[in-house]
Amino acid sequence: MRNEQVVMAWLTGRSAFAGNLSTNGQKLWSYALMIGDRSDGLNRVWDYTASGRYISQVTSRHVGLAIREAPSMILMTPE
Image 1: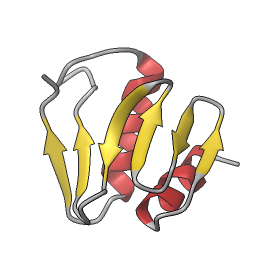
Image 2: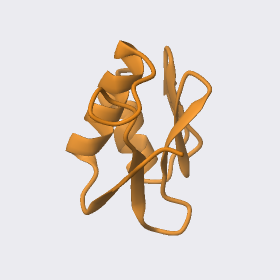
Image 3: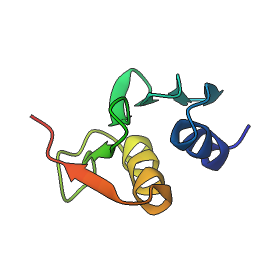
Image 4: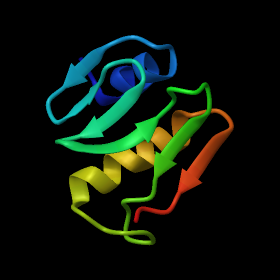
């Protein structure tokens, strides 16, 4: 499965995984770090990119993909 398919599964409430990106249909993880949540129907993505709280290049790419694919996404600032 490709990363894009994992993000689409997340947005449609299905479980999926591809390498280091996974979802249970509600939450989206890059490695073990939760980068997205839609458990209350809102698409939230945490900004773990170079302009936010940088973790790694791979996680930054996962976040960027989720931002591009999620309609009406809310960008969250990591604590």
